[in-house]
Image (cartoon, rainbow, N blue to C red):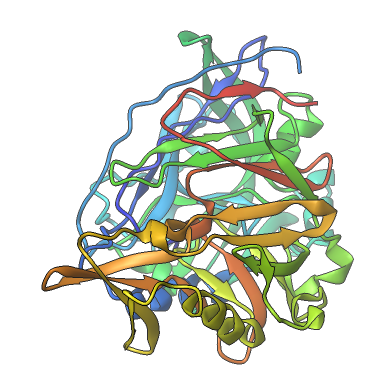
Length: 453
């Protein structure tokens, strides 16, 4: 369901203070090489994603990066979590657009048996875990989930259940259990003793649509939303983890990066406040910012402010599960025209399958294109290099074709910032402070983290 435009696995950690040491999760990402993949195909993959959208101690953690270069494989973020007693490993898709952690359980109807990601799929069995317990309707955590539509209750058996239906026709349903999540602690590069915490998660007994397909199958989904049923919120309530997470995605061909439950420390980070959820009901539970204008080479693009205004059907979403980037329809043509007007005369402007592209000679590089700035509330600007908004498509003779990676969603006024613009930057999601921050950064280098406040 989650797609990206370059080929790498994304190795990551999740840091927090458990027993005096941070806890870690190894996050991997598999997705196709950009070589030979049409923008139309990437747009199609993203469209599925969009419809489904429902300071005390510093640490340095370095994880080996794995990769895949299969151009036919649909990409997604996934991490390995350990649940139950004895612990069992489950690969779960990272999803910032939902709240709940759920995994496939025994006797599941429609759950895939094998995965095209070359991972071993597992099923959770509450009866095989000595620390597992069912969640009843009277449990305060269930009542909290009911209020946010993450849970429902059956009067017949007093069992806390859930049903998630996605816009592409896929869905899942099941019941909630409480069990231990196990973490491997790393402190200053040294593996320490394991720690664990009790969390509530979903036990899926039915999957439909794309969730049944083996091509991109994982054991479940790990929601990173802000509501009470998310693991982030649960661990924060227990005093185990901060309400902040961060990532830094490498943009080169080798790929990789980090994702931490904690704050990446970098002095050049600028912040913009999250839009309060009461203004963006249709965009919940995503991370929404107030985009105010776009500049090309320092000149404001003539786009009416109302185009970016935040309302129930408008707004700007930061989504690491989207390959490209998408502009509100009314902003797309002015943006493309502003770039085309500033390219040198030696660059030939061409249309390829409806996309604005440019043919440049081999003696040139993308640095001849203008710089773009996305200007947000609070005075924070996201500065884009040409490679942050252009994608190389192919070679023609002694030249290469580069196309604008920003797309439009017909009839929609939503702007979505995907990996095309998020790469090679630190992004900090400060949920406690209700803000998102970023800074340009070479994610190859070691990063410093803090467990937050």
